[in-house]
Image (tube, rainbow, N blue to C red; front, top):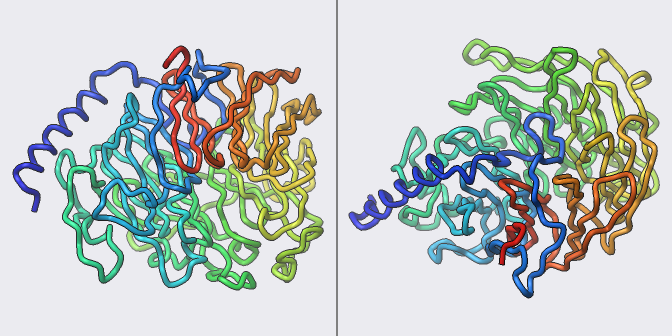
Length: 508
């Protein structure tokens, strides 16, 4: 039970929340999910963004918010708030210490903490929830709700107001959920998240995340499309749940499981299923596109109605495209650790643009061959389009886990060798490359005619988004950059392992 003093605080928080999202016109244009809505294209229509900034003088630096010590997630921005996932090595609440997954809800104007979601780690097997990694998924915000996949593989619906407007149901066991099993419950306070419902993927679907759960939930109508992060066991020699689905559909209002892919992807996962789905309209017909952990891109018809109670529908496949048809298809785990040959995997997100799918694919970054490609696929076909669907293919010299950006007839993408590529979107013809100092896991963001990207060597690079290479600036930050840059309301957000920077033109 909350004290009178805390109830008063909650009332004040509720008032401030209404003021921020209901009145202030400065927060009109957010970035409420990973990439552009539906298509996942890593571009933004924001303008007046800086081409450089200076941490020592504070030039163009609006604010800097401390995070944990390892932050792999990308921030999303909606209605005056910034949502970012991290670990708990720098706890905001002294009552919750130790290894946890955390999502912060920060104010967009100053970076102050509004509330946080705290989730204990899976302890019995580190390969299900790697220590210190924290929560890795980006949130998806719609209306008054925030949807997230936790480090435990739980799909959660969170009240965007936190506990400022009370503990809404049907789920009301937040205090118990925030502490490890067997530990004393910590009373709730005004900085805790308000969970509406939870769907536990391991318990309900029989899948287990490998290393870390990662999914940017796609919302279409009343449905959530969720990648399950299914993967290998701790010995890396077999799939934990080979018959379990890699893509499922939930009711966004209740968390009820409604549909699944039934293509047998789980049997051929080389490492883990980390790719998130996208959506596009092809010749007037909407399709869901999914990059399989088997190296195959799938197109499904979206769910249009709720199946009869108790039934799980199968998503109807429209087409599939094998990105690496010459790769081995049997005994694939014999190739674990083989850096020269083996199967391919999709670890980025497919992007839909003008009846085409752009996707990076290749050997697994941890265990696979050092080959990757950027593929351009005709999304308007049907059936097995492996031999007919490829429009062009662009090879890269190392692994690639980045999602591409398509802008003004150009494609920008970065690979793990630290090379940034600029190609013709129509033909795949290369215009230029730029070698960064360190490897790149982040994706490029194109906004305001600029390309923004960070490296694992702390460097943040800004280039011109044109056919001619134009390096505008390179800024060294405090730690490695894994999450992707995001733009919203004339502000650029950059996440390092330890900090979140809000960068705005002419700010000191």
